[in-house]
Amino acid sequence: MSKFSQEVLTWYDKFGRKSLPWKVKSIPKKDRPYHIWLSEVMLQQTQVTTVIPYYQKFIASFPNLQSLASASQDDVLAHWSGLGYYARGRNLHKTAVSMWDDYQAIPEDFETLLALPGIGPSTAGAIMAQAFKQSYPILDGNVKRVLARYFAVDGWYGVSAVAKKLWAHSKEVTPQDRVDDYTQAIMDIGALVCKRSKPLCKDCPLHKKCKAFKTDRISELPHSKPKKNKPVKQAYVLCVLDKQTVYLQQRPPTGIWGGLWSFPEFSAQEYLNEYVEDNFSSELELIILDSFRHTFSHYHLDIHPHVLQLSDKIRTSKHTRQIQDSPAKYFPLQGELEVGIAAPVKRLLEDLSQLDL
Image 1 (cartoon, rainbow, N blue to C red):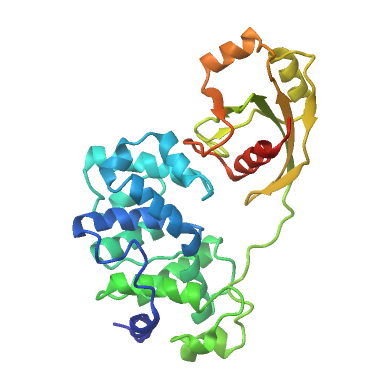
Image 2: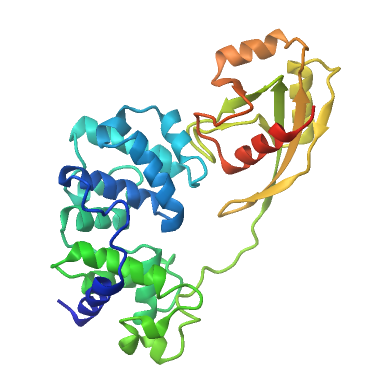
């Protein structure tokens, strides 16, 4: 075992997070791989404190692989609502179905895991290490930061040559023994000590040999992604209310918010107006709410909400056929929906419930 991994494990024994809900000893041994896999997918690009309540809700509804595989995608995405990066939720369900159909368990093989949707090299390594105690390196965001500083790796890790160096370093320091504890420990150090800003270097078990610390480059490393101005896109959404119900459509299975339920959305005001004229009475008045911005990783989306209150007006036959022929329907405006919705849709539903129409 290297000096690096020894220091990491010594720190973990004193300060590591040993009570995370997916690591508690009360979980039956046969179910641990499922809990580890679920948590690792949720932890992709999401902090532990955010993940815990979602994980607990998932486990309450889907306590094992079979129950998750048997669930509908709508039910899974409803549980995922608010966690973001919804492709993870879709892939989680797709992979659960595949795992159950082919293995009736989480596969204990790195290459098999890697071939499944939503599982990359770091997630597969974390599952192998923590669920099956096999020595595989990982390279999530926290580990990248620790290694980039410790070995003074220059360059943004989105560049393949830089990522290759970091993977080599991760493999070099990953031990054969106690690899499950080591994997959690190195992630904990990145999250709790070697933080992105204001790192607690004096509390770090690695600071004495950390090249970034010794050369005063902590604030410089790891190098950030070169900044680009994000484009701004426009979305004109139509919130159709019929008494105490609201009209939602299920989005296509791929793309932004794939498989989630949302309001009809248009790229321009004129298209929204045409939709209203074609599907509803032209006598109805559109109420325009305040616009707001939602930011994705690659662009900003300015959302312009419009409200159409049907009250006792009769819907056109075209709109009735549209509901019958597509995944669209009216939902109760009050109460929690049992389908997946994105954060901006949730925000709009809350706003709509407060309107005095």
